[in-house]
Length: 103
Image (cartoon, rainbow, N blue to C red):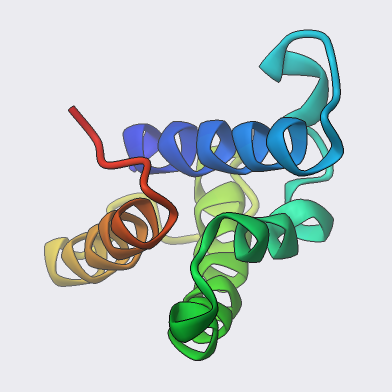
């Protein structure tokens, strides 16, 4: 789960830097991720905006739920594998749409 969160944070930080032509390191753009998720649309071709928007909504949910688990704000200590698989598919699809395919 942590790897998915890091991939999402990195993807969003890269999108902010690219969209704003910002300088500096990714680290300074990885906070307030839920507010910055829409920047991913800047990296998605127009024909993918509908799907991208839907995935961003899901990514906000994934980020919130994974944060709750990782920071101990959830009673669920062991997230079901099927849920992790679903989250992974959302992140991977966002990576494909934005051209940031994971290595």
